[in-house]
Image 1 (tube, rainbow, N blue to C red):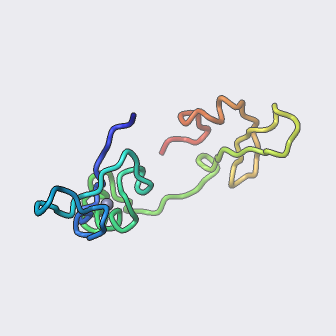
Image 2 (cartoon, rainbow, N blue to C red; image 1 turned 90 degrees about the vertical axis):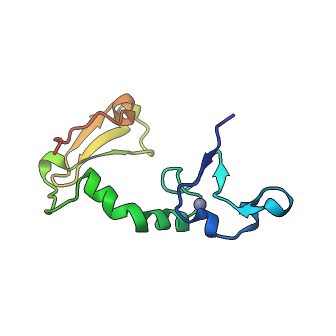
Length: 125
Ligand SMILES: [Zn+2]
């Protein structure tokens, strides 16, 4: 059984839907939604509204904290590799590959390399 967690929306409790009305008798209040999982914002928000409410208040601080982009990034041969697969091929050894979006070069991957999120041909920048 998964643990319940609260929506991180800063105004979740202000949306007066029936499912947010909790408590007994005259002590009922509209409360932040609590679920085992949420669909929005990597599982942190019950709705796009709640995600947007959070972003409106904290977005600038979050970008400044984790690093604001202050100049253009460039797609070059060295960082243009994307993983892809061909579900139509009959040859399993050719199914997974890296494709360079600049040169169109293909390099065959094993399925394990394809699924490994740490495996990359791109230079870390
Ligand atoms: Zn919410």
